[in-house]
Length: 253
Image (cartoon, rainbow, N blue to C red):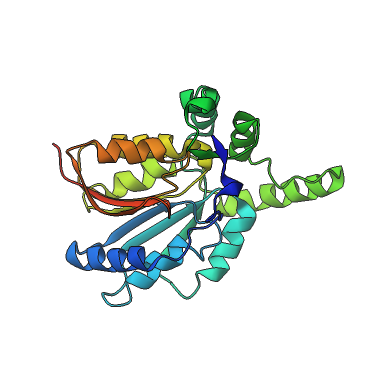
C-alpha cells in the first residue's frame, strides 16, 4: 500500500467538489431526504457543511446527526456548526471500541498490504499500530506527562454531560431505518469497512442513500467494491481520484 500523505488530494476533511455538491442537492430534492447520518465530523467544515448547505433550498431535515470521536474536534465542530441549528454534533464512537480494535488487528488487507500496491493507508510501516492508537484515542498525547494528565482530566470531566458512548451507527440508524436516510461514512481510516458492514446489518434490507469518502484508501476500498458489484445498489456518481462514491440501495426485504 501507499501512504495516504503522498496522495495529491490528501486531507483530513472531505474536500469541496462541485460535482458532489450538485449531486447531494439533486438527491435531497428528488428523494425528499429528511434524515441524515454522518460518521467523522472532524471540525464540521468539510462534508458536514457541504450536506447542511444542500438543504438551503428545501428546508431543514427532521434529523441530522454527525458523530465525532475526538472531544476537542467535537468542541470545535459544535462552534463551527452553530449556523446550522438542525445539525446535531455527537461526541461518541460509531462502533464498539473492542470490536473495532479486533477488526484492525485481524484485517486481512492490512496484513497483506503488499497485495494492494495502488491502495492508500496510514501509519507508515505499522498501520495496525497507527489505527489501534487512533481507536483508543491516544493520538494527541504529549511526551509530557503533566499535559496528558490535564488533557485526560478535561475529557473525563466532560464525559458525564456530553459523551454518548459507543455504537452510534447502530443507535441512530436504528432510529432512522424507516426514513431512507442519507448516510456519509468518513470516519477512522482503519474501520471504514466495518462501519459499512455495520450500516448494512443495522438497516437490514431497508433502502438508504450513501456517500463513501476515501474509496481509494483501505478505509472504504472494499465498501466501494461491494457496492459496485451488488445489484442492490445504484451508483449515482463517483470520482475515484477524488475518493468518493455516491449510491442508492433499494429495499431488499
